[in-house]
Image 1: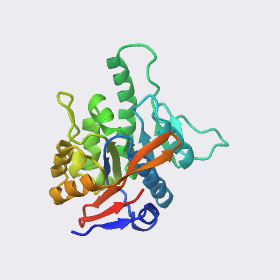
Image 2: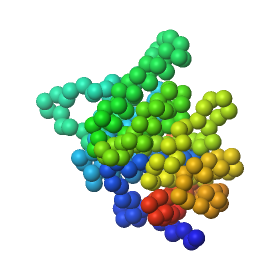
Image 3: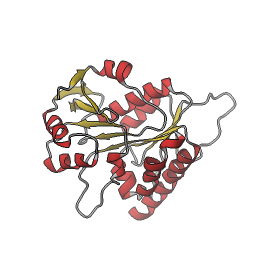
Image 4: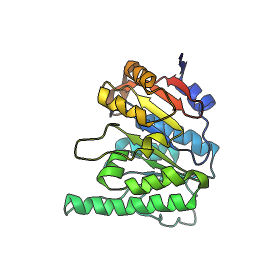
Length: 257
């Protein structure tokens, strides 16, 4: 199959078409630009669908890219859910970043339970509310290490009818030995999937779980995606082209950097 090649601007402004309740997944190794593209797509979607409640869940204690994109998109950073009320002169933000404060003392287990409890509240309300986009940036950390796989599964399997969509990113599709892996619904429920260049054969085998595509063809395209050295605010990075898959065709396109 010949796969179209699109500029980033054309993809975002012409071809990216999001409907409420659809799920979106991004899979590629770290530091290749998936968070940047994810927030670009979220920004376009928030502009087009202001009625959707957009909440990005951040399980890490520190993430400069999330902080920068929250400012760019006007999203309000809060550390608990529901968010505190606005002051009379404050406008309603277009979305929120739910970013729990990590415990300064205590065990790793206690900190994970603390962070997970706050994020779980956001996930539950977004699912119950519907007409929402919930972003889980670093799905492995949130779903596996923090134990939120069941809540993510709930949105992935039952959120679409109420317009509750889950957007997720992950670095390692194959999971880890002994550490667990993402629910398989993270692969076969999303209508939109974005893949970056991945040299690991074991990771590419997980594309079989996507369903409705020729996983061998997809694995071959992903292995050949080009990477470009790009100067970013965080230093020079090797940014990958992306393979975009829309499963209702399926349709595929390579997105430039």
